[in-house]
Length: 78
Image (cartoon, rainbow, N blue to C red; front, side, top):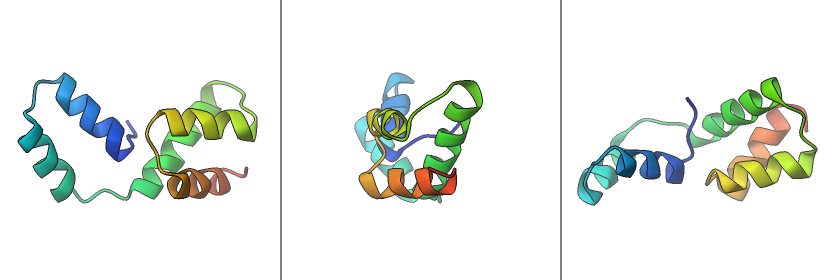
């Protein structure tokens, strides 16, 4: 499952981790957030149709940064 940094924080909070544990985990995991944006964009396009703007908005809603979103969109052909 692909997450933005913010999305991962929200998921860990939902699972009951403390703010300190969440910050430690996010700061110490070796994740390429740009590739996570590609994976998330790809998974959305596999299941439904999106305009470029619609996919951008969805990735923004998921917590990706504008730079990560643009990288993800370009990587999936948008």
